[in-house]
Length: 209
Image (cartoon, rainbow, N blue to C red):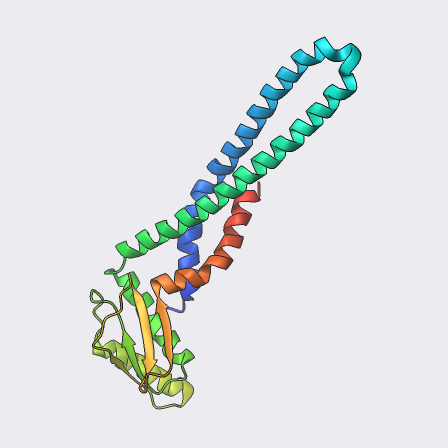
């Protein structure tokens, strides 16, 4: 049975679920560091201010304002660095999660849909699909998908399993009979394609409070 789940959405949900758990702690820590540093600075300035109040009030105010501005810049930089760190960890975590489900029925459903959607994207015809050495694909699955594509596109379609293996965690590479058209939908490639969209969504998680 084909699961109508967009491959990128499948991966995006895995990433965002993990990012959501970590995002609040990271942003709160950044804010806490900022407030702590600002409080310590203000206390230090107040002590100096009492000594200089008669002849350096204007100068002290300028120092406070400048230091606050500098601290804000510093905290913003730390937040951005933490965001980038979180995004990279989220992608690494997603890859680890995907490695654990490669042999599950859920992954088989995902793989079947991936073969179907890729074959349909290529317009059907005589196609060859390549997977890694650990993924077993039944001929019945390929025949079922080919029949569905043939019916939907009205193009005679066959899908055969290639003899070579792809060097990837999972996913597929599909070529036409002549080998001049190739679509790389390995897990690693799908993650790379998703990065721009995911970065934007994780940023929303981090900065929405």
